[in-house]
Length: 88
Image 1 (cartoon, one colour):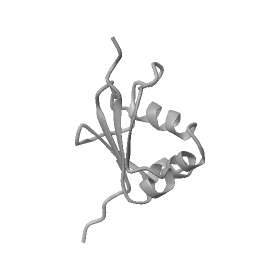
Image 2 (cartoon, one colour):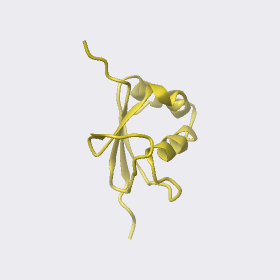
Image 3 (cartoon, rainbow, N blue to C red):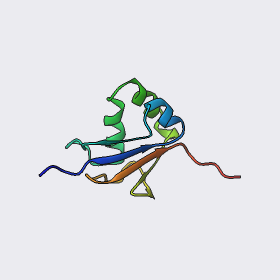
């Protein structure tokens, strides 16, 4: 049985750099956290490297809940990446 894919969403300038608004990927066995996912994504090409080169400028949500770099990711999860939100 094949594991469910990870649903990735990219917003704002991350979408522009990656070149996609969303995608489905098979979660590599070695990836278990948001930080591990970001590290793996950076290896997928120059657009990903540009988007995730400065991780301090990227926020994440797993299954629509804000997530820290050590948050777990599992097959079937929805993971969204977006710039920090500013209020006013």
